[in-house]
Image (tube, rainbow, N blue to C red; front, side):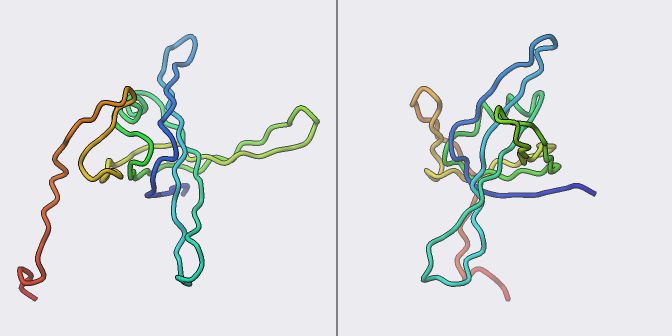
Length: 135
């Protein structure tokens, strides 16, 4: 089984392109995923995960997720081998996205579009006071 699940923040706006020939959408972006921090005196470390998505899902990601947004992805790990211009073997690692989840963005309810305009949205999250919990 090859299945990975990550939650992190986008390091930049997603790049949307279309394949020549069939015109299938391809979206690429990088997700910064924080590592567990056991020693609070040390700075927070993160892994930067390259992600690729195809089709209608790729278009949805490119249209609604932007730099700084918290985003959840699920997919398969792909390790690609290639030879660089100097003849050295190189490897690249990416997640091929099969599913995703929109999460709270960095601004807390106001999304910023590519052209700089802002769009407010209702996150559907209700704060619960500890006194409201029956146990």
